[in-house]
Image 1 (tube, rainbow, N blue to C red):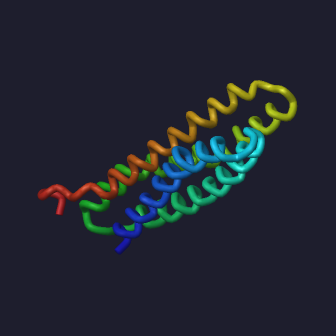
Image 2: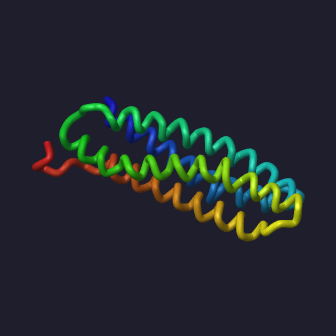
Length: 145
């Protein structure tokens, strides 16, 4: 049961990052009346996404640490470092980069630098979530069972 829940958590994590970053936020900038309004809404959505990422990674770490079939344990070990990396990136973007983006916008700082860094870290988190999903959903090899 834990392997299936782990796959669902990884799918939720990766899918929510994909939907928000590649569909919802671009649509905000197309359909809202101003870039400032779109940016403010995007910031709120990214904060919600951070908390979803934290919850998914927290429960993934709990489920992946448990003792299961040997094949799942190998898959869990392969995914574990990416789960931790994704959690670290989510927290770092929310509490390290996002406040600097807000300050740069308000005070005329280097908005392009901080926005680019936040985007790169979001993409890295998306890759970590995707690799986690890939590792956990991989069919066990014949010799692993």
